[in-house]
Length: 103
Image 1 (cartoon, rainbow, N blue to C red):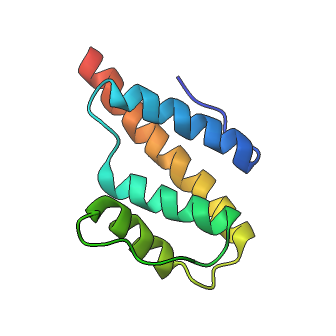
Image 2: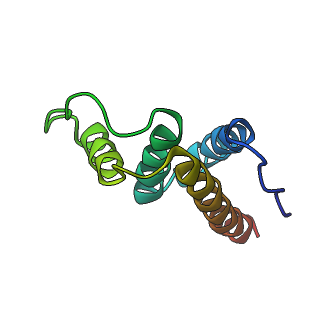
């Protein structure tokens, strides 16, 4: 089943939340993709990375922060487009994996 591409960030966030909920019941959301999507979303909504880097004890949050920091200077509009493109790629891969596992 093909998912229509979101037309804006709000629709994309709905798809992300649906996909996250679905994968949490199966294999879990892929770590690298979650970090990248989080960084792109923050860049699209907030802009360049702000705040303090999380401590080493908060490994996952620290990694997401570092990926976001790497996007410094990317225009928010570009980050939104990339967020939607990456989300659609991840959606396709996870949907195929779930369908294959269910078969």
